[in-house]
Length: 129
Image (cartoon, rainbow, N blue to C red):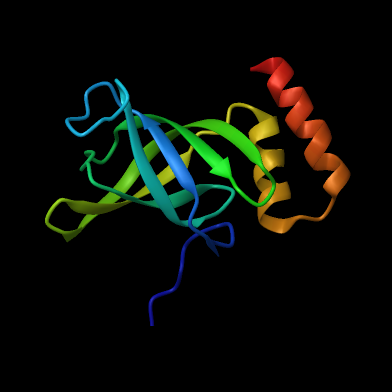
């Protein structure tokens, strides 16, 4: 049996993701590639996309947290990739959290402990962005 080495619990959830990828062949709207998460945690996500990114690629991502109606922008690094079928790929990304507010927004979205926190994080994040 293979033991899962992840530090954080993964939540199976489909969220919309916009990847800023000016070099991506299949980018839409100028330089944005649309994708979906298959699962997400505080430390990263498994993404389904129609563009194959090499391991080690640094990506700017925008995650749309539907349940809490928040948007977070996070730098991430591609840790692994796998072809699902021709033209469709999975990739594991590790978030490079430089903004504690992103972590708080993800905690609120994934675990939903305090609803008051959501409003204050969102308001502060918009002021900072």
